Image 1 (cartoon, rainbow, N blue to C red):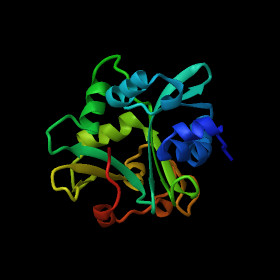
Image 2 (cartoon, helix red, strand yellow):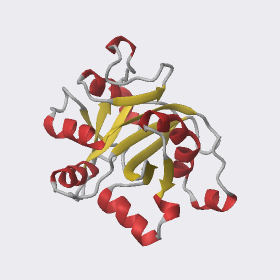
Image 3 (cartoon, rainbow, N blue to C red):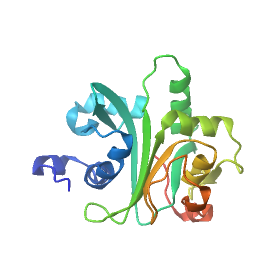
Image 4 (cartoon, rainbow, N blue to C red):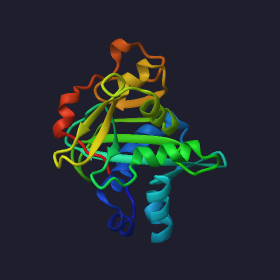
Length: 213
């Protein structure tokens, strides 16, 4: 089990800590392994902020002489079996979806190769409930080309001024997209697994569930 040095534990927020402690050890073998580099501890605060806000990169996978950006999200309490992506803001400012789509379409722009969302029982001392990794381009492409209500659901947050897109892992797998899922009471699933054993999600649960930064 991952046990970071005391100084690092002090610096990591709950999400980053549980990602290193629970999520990465479970997901890494499905992505080829490699070393996890957490941006907030490995880079200056200004550079880490730019990677996060401009490129959406929270961590880096070092594998076979290459670096792959990771967008990570850890939430607690229960598993919703899907991704949540910020869709709109009350302020009208650019959202996670808009930023990633622009980066993907801009030649040479930096964006996370993998998007990983995980659900754990409680911060720092809990256990992993479920997690999934997919290529960011697949997730954002589904949102860009799909239809709300058919391929994903757009849910308005309780503040009434912002919304997020809820995309079930099973829906992505059914469409032939590679989604690597661990936990959730089932074996690891990818695009080749029968829909009969895929993770189910009740989108109504999202109304009181996770919101996306």
